[in-house]
Amino acid sequence: QEMPLMNDIFAKYEDLGFTILAVNVDEDSADADRFLKALPVDFPVVYDSTSKVSEMYEVDAMPTTVMIDRDGNKRFLHRGYKPGYEEEYANQVKQLIRE
Image 1 (spheres, rainbow, N blue to C red):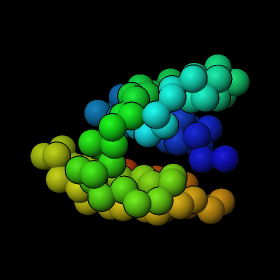
Image 2 (image 1 turned 180 degrees about the vertical axis):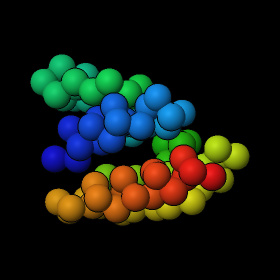
Image 3 (image 1 turned 120 degrees about the vertical axis):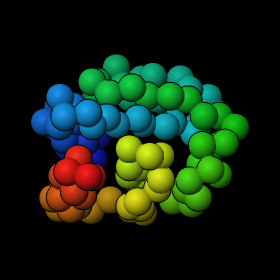
């Protein structure tokens, strides 16, 4: 559910310097590749089979959304996803872009 909504947010704010980086933590990336073939996104997807990125940002649930400011600081952390979260995401993205 979340990926198409994140893609919409990415498309809306990309020209303002905003980006999304999806991180897949599966040991075998084949499942992610099949998923992305069925539901492609415009933002980059990286593979973190050793979970180094997850450890760096204290990811302990899937999905987790971490918003990082222009200085590289973690500013917002969302664990899990429920319909409607995208409105909060958009507000937080706007806040970060204005800074």
